[in-house]
Image (cartoon, rainbow, N blue to C red; front, side, top):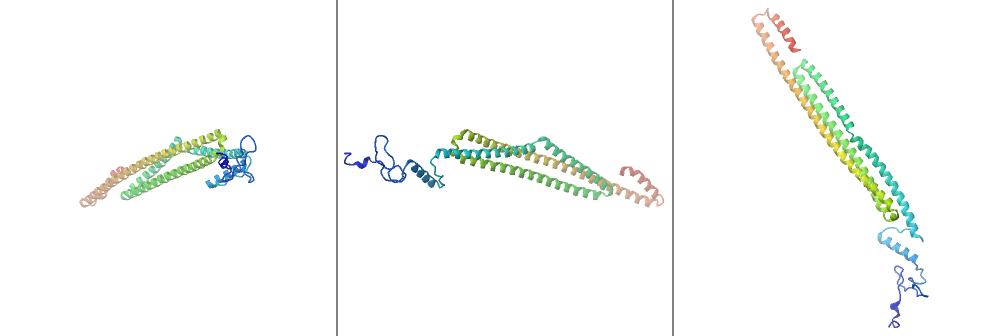
Length: 300
């Protein structure tokens, strides 16, 4: 049966796309896998398979070489060197970010800033009291109006300063976080691209992945610390603003009460002077002088 159908025993050429039969065996041992006369060998077949695979993946085929393993080893070593350099750069950026976060979360620096703001508020309050006292002596109505205008201006300035500080801190924190995330993503992409060609450098790739994980954790801690700091700034600013408003409101009320007292006293003096003048025109100047000297300490 086999002598009547010899075509069933022929082997096809192993070159990709070749339909010719393989060369007939010339002796004992493994039979040939490629045809004759067309340059089909193991090397040319390997190159053709690489070319077809690159075309199917839509990428450029690597340069032909007779030493593919050596070439892959050299390429992997170069990519590993680039990966190490990128990891060092990311580590430097993480160190700078860590220093900035340390300064932002330093309680001593925050306390110093709050103390300076408190001292400035006390100075402004003392100046407001001095202006209110002088205004009370000049005219009660003018003092009340001026105190209200000063209070409104201080409240507006305090709110503007608070909003500006919070906005600036939020923008700076967002910029640092975005930069760190961009560097982290770039490092991750480089590591993924070099993974296939750096199989022989498994330990170094693991170290680079650990560094990328540390950078992600550092970024997460930095974001959490920035959010905590912003919440503290908002609470402190709100408390300071409420205290300033309450203090200025109390001073305005005291100024209004003092003005009412001055008005009542002035009305009483006017009534007394008019009564004395109608009773004894000659004695009116003397009684007015005595009343003025008697009421002088209360005015002071």
